[in-house]
Length: 169
Length: 237
Image (cartoon, rainbow over all chains, first blue to last red):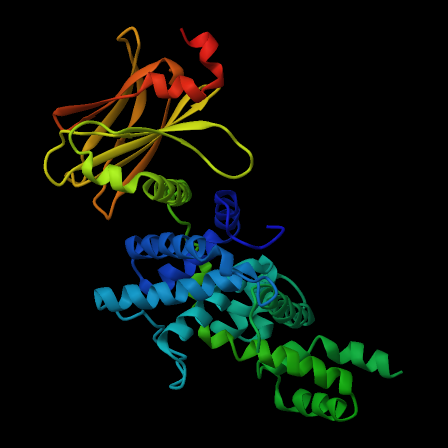
């Protein structure tokens, strides 16, 4: 994507190869229906193609632009089918729109998938399962200090991945 | 000295950001943070991530990322290609209507044959506009034929037939033999365009036909008009 514009058929193919997995993942997360998610991704690329000339890489990345389109598509699909975008059971701040919450959840989950297994493991055990560091260390057969340092490097890795995914805090 | 102390503390910063440190260790770390802007900065960055963790569901990220159906990319590419060709077709047709609009509107009696030399880029590639006559009311079929070294490229526009109808297109040579040009399925919409090709040279093409539903529509291709502009007419006898 040298120019960033989505004005040729080949550009659409390249954009699809690079971003369809993520777009589909988010669509599925927010619509909770494989058929609708597929429709949403298709509609996103068609809208992007029709508006290809308007894409300006100076303003933002192609990925960000595609996600912005997908977000609108998901809203439209939700409206058309009276399907409320699905939200996680917990962790919703009242000020966050359901769809933005779905996007945030999807981003963090996707980032979790991308960090190393060792890092993810200690975050799951210590944070999500709330287990003591000593217990996790014994189970993994490593010193407690190692669990602590993996938690540290795990959070750092998560931050890097989220930044790569365009997350800004 | 200071860096050594930082190294001691650095790897506890993650547990600290998650609120996992026991009180004594936390107090000692906070004493270090008081005097260490670098570690404070690091804590700030880690806390920015830590507050996001409640948004993720560990059951979900334990599963592999869902993938779109394998053929979705191809389907999107095909739709985009069809839209691209349709846009091209619209532009071409607009030119065609500008030049021959008045005639086209009234010439429903017989197939209207015209030769259009595309303006721009100095090209002299002649393309042939063909309209089908004697169609059922509400149905419109027309086609653009372009000569290529491989044979003939056909852009066929259809409207007004039942959605889902299979359309098979062929070219008929001067000797009466049929050359298939492929098939497409008409989908309901404002209009529909299919891009097809046939091995038969445009200069040897006498007629174009489309078999739709259980009917066949044929429109003659005006050989005289083609050969006027077609530079390959020598080998076209």
